[in-house]
Image (tube, rainbow, N blue to C red):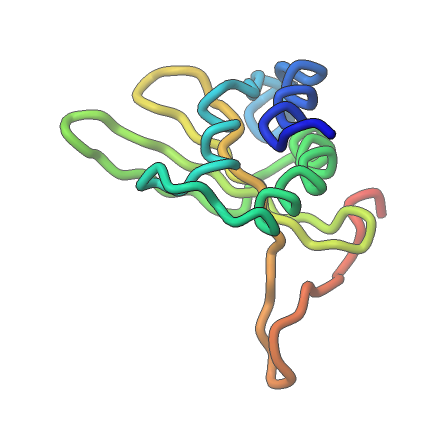
Length: 137
C-alpha cells in the first residue's frame, strides 16, 4: 500500500497546475508546500491519519473547484518578518460534499494550492456538512 505522501504526490504530479478563472485564468501550482501542509501542522507535527485520509479523498474535488469557480469567497493576508502572505478560499459543493479550498501566495511568488478541508456548518441540531447546490448545477 502506498504511503499517504506518495498518494498526494501522485495527484500533484498528475495535476502540477490548473488555470483558475477566479484569477483571470492564471495558474495555481501544486507543489511541495501544499504536500507538506496536507501532512503536517504548522509546528511540523504530523496530522492524524483520519485528517490526512480526508485530505487525499478531497483532493480531486479541490482541483475541480479551482478549475470551475469564477470567484473566491474569502481573502486574507498578513505580514511576518517582512514577508507578506496572501490567502484565498473557495467554497463549493462537489458530489454532495461542501469543501473549502485554500490558495496561498508568499510575497510576489506564484499562487499555490495550500489546503482542502470539509466545510462544516453548525446549526441548532449540531455540526453538518451542508449541501446547498452542486458546483455543476
